[in-house]
Image 1: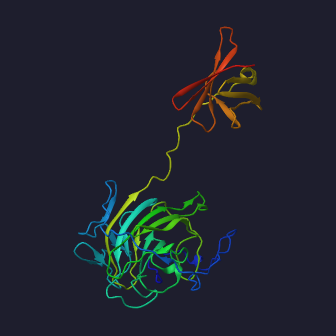
Image 2 (image 1 turned 30 degrees about the vertical axis):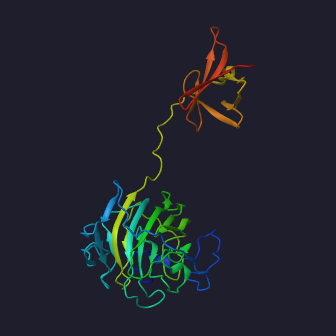
Image 3 (image 1 turned 180 degrees about the horizontal axis):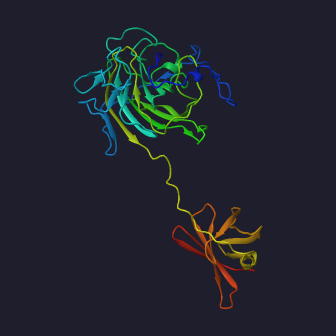
Length: 349
């Protein structure tokens, strides 16, 4: 990576301080040549392409570039070969037609053969997650360059844990697990992007946190953007090849829970539930504090929210607490319904 031709960032970012307020200064400078290089590790033995799972979005099946477009919105001008496509130097960045957020991404790539150049000027390209967070593509086989610019680096931020590069011309694989950054309604950062990467079957990025979008010779802060954006492949003037590209969108979290109905109960109606309950294998203590019932079953007090005359839900837990009355209306036992089971605690006092 060096020349960015992807989604433009506001000019304001170019004037931004190198770190967000409150961030700890990083130990290493961007592209620090003194930074230790990753140890060389053997790739997985198999070079067989990974088969897309049934729920994957296949971005390239070896026959068509229909899922891709130039960064300028025009039809892609990269070279389509039999079973793969390759960068046409000077044709510009390629972007997916579809947009993605949290995802699993698989792609395979091969550096040009014969190898030409050295350092960053050898088999250079890049995978831009959401169009702005780069996973470096580089011929790093017996090629010395800065650690945070090697193949498998999150460019300018995190070097790979290992150098798993195969020789030029051989097919290599990236398996990427990406969690997009979250922003609040005002554009503030709630949580940064996180990335896990396997290179040729070997973990090289382990749930690392990105400090912001990719840039050259700088660290830029996050700027709020849509939840889903295209994936980009970089034209860095080298005829890097790509094949077997697919994405599996990942769920971005639990669905919001349905509202729990509650009702107001006066203190006088709650006082009768206060007391100690228990059996040989467990005990429960119910107290009344500031108009709310609390239950302590040995793990600390939890609020009880009333949803019927003698039925309560434990706040934050899918469990219901009920109180059993005798014919005179006195509370004689407590029941807890959780996980499809009902537990009964007779009243002790």
